[in-house]
Every structure is written in structure tokens, then in C-alpha cells.
Image (cartoon, rainbow, N blue to C red; front, side, top):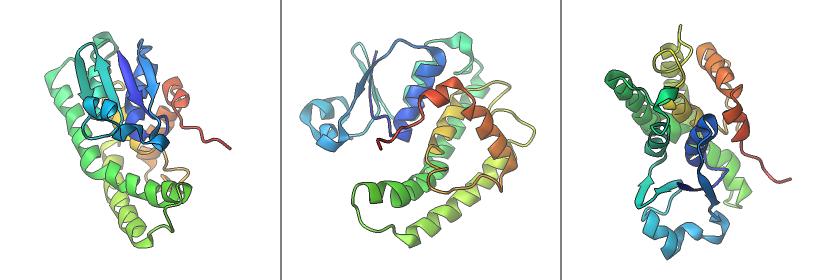
Length: 208
């Protein structure tokens, strides 16, 4: 298997978390975003959307980070990362859809305006977009905090890809000044995630 990714991408991090957690043998290709590699014909043959990550397993090409991590987790079913039971699998997918629809867009906007835009010379942050995204984050962080009341993990009694799915969206929460203090259950859950070797191994590192 071969993963096309960029180490600063929270989406790519979902796949990297599963690879690290399960010790999977996956060749990594770091896509040169600054050189426009995702817009080149060779890459667009793999993913016409021009996005990372992309997983290639023989003649099978898979895109979309939340599906890629499920596919990778299925390689070691004994781990429980991709649940064997049908209902738990649907619950994992529920959180994948929830994250893609609500949580990730809010955090992605905050990260883009506060962190990425200044980094790439994209102008001043849009304060209106930041306010709206922070309000959206607060709304859905409360939902997540309520779900985690009395729970260690999002689905069932052990860690699953659902936890990696949602946690990856929080990759830049700290650097962007997004506090988890108002959400004690969410904060405790994130503390458990941050102690995992896979999380520590995939934390983005900035030069300088």
C-alpha cells in the first residue's frame, strides 16, 4: 500500500494515525503542495479532486480520509479499531458524517483564517468568518461533550477510528487558541488521545 499525503493536513493525519497505531506497512509519499503537485496530471489520475490523502492498494485507489482510515483499520480486524459489530460500524460512520458536516468545517475555517492564511501570505484573517466558525464550534463541541459524559471513547468500550476521525479535526485547536476548558468531557477525551504514541508521532511539526 502507498499513501499520498502531506504531514500538515488534518485529513491526511486520519490515515497516518491508523497506520501508526496499528503498525501497518504502508509506503508514504509526501505530496509537494507548494509545487502544485495535486494539480498535476499524474496526481489527478489518482484523485480528480486534487486533494490528499490518497491510498493506493494494488489496483485499488481510495480517496476521502474518513473512508481511507476505515479501510486501513480493516486490515487488522482484531484491533477493534474498525468494529466487527454492525451497529457499532454504523455508529462509527455516524461520527464520520457528523465530523465532516459540522465539526471539521468549523475548525478548518478557524485554522485557515488564523494560521494558514498568514502563513501563505493570504492577507488578514476574516474576523467575521472566525466569529461564525467559533460559534459553530461551540455549538457542536457541546454535542460532543454531552456524548462523552461517562464515556472514554466515542463508540463502544475501546478506541475506534471514530476517535481518530474527530480528534484529527482538533489538530490545530491549540495553536489557534481554541480552548477546550468549557467542555470537560471533551477535554478529558482529548487528553487520552494525546497520550497515544500514534498521536504524538503524527503531530505536525513546523520548520523554524
